[in-house]
Amino acid sequence: MADIKISELDAVTTFDKSEIIPVVQSGVTKSLILSKLYHYYNVETYGAVHDGVTDDTEAIQDAINAAYAGGGGTVFFPNGTYLLSGPLQNNIPFGAYETDYNSQLYIPSPDPGSTTRVTVKLLGESHNKSASVGVGVIWKSTIAGSGTWPSVICSRRYNDGSGTLMNYHDTIIENITILVNPFTDSTGVSMCGINLLYASHPVICNVTVGFYATHVDGYNATLEILVIPENHAFGIGIGFDANDFAEVKGECVVDGFYYGFLFGEGVYAETIHSYHNYISVMTLTADYGCVINYMVSHWCRIDFAGQLETVYKTPGKNVLMVNLVVIEEWFEPASGSWIATRGPAWLEKEYFVTDPSNLLYGRMNFRVSGGMNAMTQKNGGTNFIPRNVYTGGGWHWNTALRPTDPDWGMMGLNINTAKMEMWNGYSWVTLDVTAL
Image (cartoon, rainbow, N blue to C red):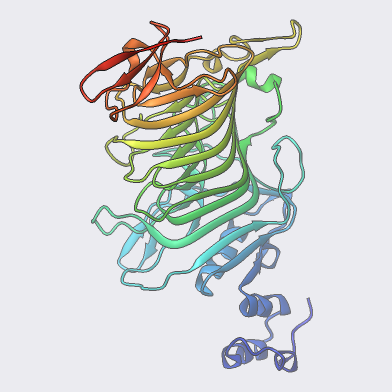
């Protein structure tokens, strides 16, 4: 690219030219100057080739670091496949402290004592909903993960011994597809996709996370040889700590992980798709609840779970409100019917909800394609109340799984008695209404 001339800066009035002119005089290329002017960082400027062959890990990290050092900005990814073969990053120094991201790429955290807060946005040129289609911006990770929830990209703070690990720089990821190695012959998927559990107000938009050769729109023979991910890898983890509410915007897809989505503090999700995951969504302990506007959960063994892990904190209560979830089992093309035993055994339907410690509170409106349109199958989850919108029924439960912490006046159908009942503040009272 041609060098920029000092005269070209005369029309620019939104920055201090005294910072730029010495850089121009040093012979830096035009693209780098424009990055400084507009907080816009094209990864090609930092050496990314995105040809699916060259390792682009270092180039991408250099672009992210430059955006951070420049006071925040947009890291832009032209369409193509970015090979990520770089190692997991740990012991990254920040002043007197170090940060163990355990990820290939990371969002830098502020130095100790820093009051600066910036926004780093990773923006792909175009959105690719299906990981099986080689278009858009694709990050292809080739390595095997190790340690605690290794990931392709992570955001967290240095550990100062206080236990507070929030990264108070805002992180946005948009229009990017992440593929991980499925390791179908051994441990299964061993790398998480996006770990923004300790990011301040993280936002992801139109992001797809899956494995090589995945097809999010239907059955694929690759699934027959998948194994349960031994390290319980997740596709997207977001919004765990503090009250900086996280957002999942646009249409986001996760395919082929132990956990599809990990949702924590105050997450709002517009539209999410979970395919071929052992558990579609697991909520983590939080003071504020989560809301899912629309969700597709296809061919997953379990659709919702209260916190089952102790990786970051002791499991605790969370609230989840699901406006609509469409649940689908395996489709057998030969018979033309929906069945529960298609594909690998670890994906056969087990429960709609598993919450053995009854940590999950809230409600869901659901529709099941191909049957099972009555009581949702549960393992615990007494305070997570379902309603089948297809049959037009109300909230329902069975006698063994009645809500254990109901509000006065809570009303629903007991499918064991086929009668409506209400909590009067002291006990369940059968109403004088017979269910149709």
